[in-house]
Amino acid sequence: MRYVSTRGSAPHVGFVDAVLGGLAPDGGLYVPQTWPKFSATEIAGFAGKPYAEVAAKVIGAFADGEIAAADLREMCHEAYSTFTHSAVVPLVQLAPEVFLAELFHGPSLAFKDVAMQILARLYDHLLGGQGRTQTILCATSGDTGGAAVEAFRGRKNVKVVALFPEGRISEVQRRFMTTATESNVACVAVRGSFDDCQAIVKAAFQDESLRQAVDLSGVNSINFARIAAQAVYYFTTAAALGAPQRKISFAVPSGNFGDAFAGYVAHRMGLPVERILVATNANDILAQTFETGRYVRGKVHPTMSPAMDIQSASNFERLYFEGVDREATDTARAFTAFAEAGAIDVPPKAYAAMRELFRGASASEDDTARAMVSTLNETGQLVDPHTAVALSALSRAKGLKGPVVVMSTAHPAKFPEAVAKACGVTPALPRGAADLAGRPERFDRLPAEADTIKAYVRAFSEG
Ligand SMILES: *Cc1c(COP(=O)(O)O)cnc(C)c1O
Image (cartoon, rainbow, N blue to C red; front, side, top):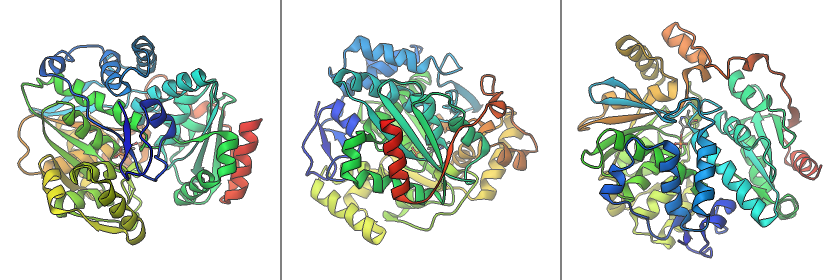
């Protein structure tokens, strides 16, 4: 299986290089040249199988022999044994046709663990095979950093530097990063905003000499392995509810569009999907796109669902590429224009193709709080603000038929202030994380200066 860039001018690569490379050298995103397919019998067979077994099958279809099947199975088993629920992604019923897929039973209590736990093992395995050590640099507005640190801590062939904006993330989010004791992890509180952190990461990646010296890599949601790993729970949840005989819909709290795009991927691989409802908070660029056909960047509004406070959904480029029948020149032109002007029109034919599967809806802060309260009142279930955005969007979406799986992307205890404010109940951290507040923290403080942080990364990587 070869991987091509959505912008068409990067060499085709195999799965291993697409994973270790992250972004394609022409600025595009990698997608497989053709979508692997599962038969109806294979999909029906996913029902009731251990999660790790389905993960090995789905990810294996993309790795296409580049990783030995036995190695991949072992990595999947290890990755998903870090989850505290034996079903890994259990379904909880909220109403006759509404189900929550709880994606938050991993070590950092957010859905990013599902992909990051396997990604870290893939990296370590592939780098070890090549005798390489890489340094992963990531900027986090909250959940990615914690998931990355939890997944990469103690790995032999990878070092991690996580940058977060000082004082702008929750204490629970910070502690998931800063309480790691392993020497391959460094956390940096940057005196600036998340945008400053991201700009510094970008500057580091553009510094060729640093890139070479520390073998710099990223694990943000454009990495194709993360998409492949996220397609897995679309299969397991749908099969549990009767797919492929029944068509299932999904409601997905969305920011960078990695999660919802993984649903599209599962659909292309043969899963019958009725609809994917892309749910956003006040940062509604994506919801608007699916309702109007225009992709327009706005100003970022801080909300109580901060993992979705995003105004440019990187993975949308992959869907656009499919929508224009993989016209890479058109895609490159559109996303260069978007970077410059902050707005593009989706061509009518591509928009029509997107509307066959996708709908968009957004939730205000009031809507989100109301959804947390009504869910608690009607079902006794506490949900986090990201999940509440999807539940609220779902309550307003018209014409969704049949069973709906709502992606529940964070444990309510990860956002205790917002939950307590809406519901009057402070959610408890699950066992295993209960002592988080008492663990010693370790992090450095640096100014938001690219040169200072680049020097820090170099010293940490070489030290
Ligand atoms: C990252 C994240 C999202 C958004 O997922 P995307 O793949 O970026 O669309 C939603 N909820 C939570 C809790 C997250 O951490």
